[in-house]
Image (tube, rainbow, N blue to C red; front, side, top):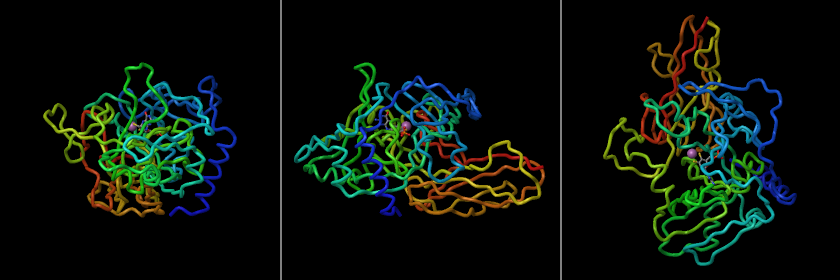
Length: 411
Ligand SMILES: Nc1nc2c(c(=O)[nH]1)N[C@H]1C(S)=C(S)[C@@H](COP(=O)(O)O)O[C@H]1N2
Ligand SMILES: [Mo]
């Protein structure tokens, strides 16, 4: 899927950034220029959001919180194409002491712990001494769409825009781990980034993967996103990409990998990001005694992008309806649309396939009759898993993937 020309361009641009001293950013102090829209409302109570363009390397974003930043992608961006532009890719950080600049020339990645020989890599080591790889993958927050949970749950109140799809370029994590030599008895690899909490008592943000997963050849250390160095807020200069898994594992500003001989018992693995060990992580509000496990693979989702709820459309004329879908931890087999008229589900036409972890575009043509029209969209992945018709619920607000529905009026 990835062609050598694209990989070369991504590497050259990253090498150029390193040669020119990395990205240096001033955060704050940017005054807002004219913009068409200053605020928007997400479809749930408390969904009023300012639109901000005052974060470095970011254009218009929905502001959930400034420090540490939580920025949501305006949903209209997803109608423009299958790849989410870097300057409107959502942003999520847990801890507030985030470096405001990182010098690519002095940055180092350490691999240590239960290895034959600890290794320190410079960025140019990664860019020149290892075979590059490239894949398209959806980065989705575990709590994407949490604001739509009913009953409401605490946590970042995202609409549907805490997700994005990018073409990632980097090196295979397996190559890096094998270079250090994993020792017998190793069970997990733990990933840590440059930022820290404001208080010394705040647990440092770290996530771990089982060794076999870390060495599956798909998990990668990315240095470029859509052919350019990562924006600082998306993890410059390096981030982990864990295709098909929720983004909590996609550690940004990655500078430390520790090979563990025991399962990781840090806060972010054993207390946070736990889901009920039930189908679709679904429980009823108030249910107790459920076994909890770390969140892991994504589930399929699909969205309308060319229409919004309550929109007016012309009656009696052909209308192209389009959107995006992804399969979760595997590809999309089919996307189906229902118009609620009792005619059941009909197949949407799928766009170009950018690989099983990518967004894919879908499209159908309808001729709406005058009056209200309720449309639903449902994706089924290549493992045969479909989106549920009734919303899944859990107290963390994780893994929402209910069939999306919109009502438009034709006249
Ligand atoms: N270093 C670091 N990496 C991190 C996080 C973080 O707080 N610190 N948050 C994770 C979570 S929960 C999400 S949703 C994604 C968000 O990635 P993005 O900001 O590039 O969209 O980063 C992940 N990687
Ligand atoms: Mo997240």
